[in-house]
Every structure is written in C-alpha cells, then in structure tokens.
Image 1: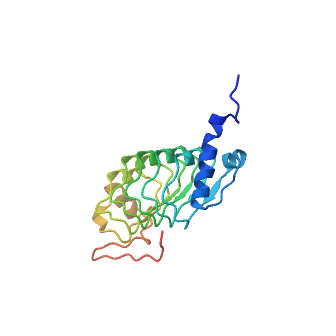
Image 2: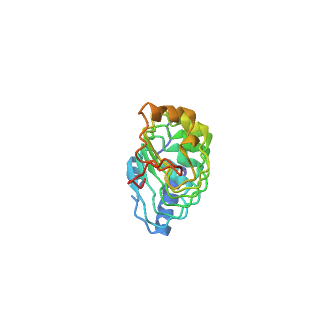
Image 3: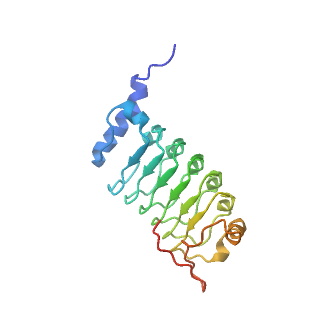
Length: 200
C-alpha cells in the first residue's frame, strides 16, 4: 500500500516549519499543499537567526532570498533544495557553508556578499550551471581551486576582500583572458583596479 501523504510523520516537518515562522514573525503558507508547491520564498530583512532543518522539505523552491538576516550557519538539509536556481544569502553572518551546498546543482546565481566567509567547501565545484557568484565583503585571503571548475561562470564579484588578480585559480585567469568571465564587477586590491558599481 502507498503511504498516506497526510500521516502525522509526513506532516511533522510542516508543523515544525510553521512553528518556526511564527516564532520569527514571518509569513509563509500554513498548509502542506501550498508549502510543497512553493517556488519562491523571500524572507529577507527579517532578523532570522537560524533556518530549521525542515527548510529542506521545500523541494519545489527555485528562488530563495535570505539576505539581511542574522544567519551564522546553514542546515545540511539546504542541499535538498535541488531545484533552486537563485540563492541569496547576502548580509548575514555566515562563517562557512555546508558541504551540501554542492548538491544545489541547478543554481545559476549564488550571492554571498557581506558575510564572514574565509573559504568555500570543495563541493562548490559541483555547481556546474553557476553563472553568477557574489563573494564581495567577506574575509577571503585566497580562493579555493574548486571554483576554477565553474566553467559556466560569467560574473564573479570579489570586492572588499584582500585579493589580487593573481589569487584567481589559473582556470579563471584563462577565462578572464578569453573574455568569458566578466571582470567589470571586480575590484582588486592591487595597482590595477577594476571598479564595480554593483553590490552583489
């Protein structure tokens, strides 16, 4: 016999998510059908300090906006949101990303500016569709070689980090030389400055 979609065990994540939303004073759908079908969730500027594990059950999400909160970490379950194409985490307090970020293989845009990141997990290399990566205003002193495997990357923002052009993995240096990677939005802390008017 097939399982009942409305069993208590199946709905427990819904109760957990709704309870979290009420504590954080944010508005989300209250019923399972709408939550399961939710494709865009914007809970930016809500002073959220954490995400519940149940967020990983919103598997229809294609866009998730979490900028301007107080997040210090992400749950491993974020990696279950495999339909995400846009993930905005700007202006939080993230110090690291979970390895499961690499499971978000549909991502085309990942915005991480204004956090406290010093490195990225090696699994970032699995984001083969990623086109735009915003890393401005973090604490990077070097870039992981893994981002050199992001062959579809067209925009990379590194403003506000202690980096120079030589810190790019050789693969990305080649993409810049070949005109495949947009350097107009990158400011280097070196004698050669490419100014940016964007804040991704």
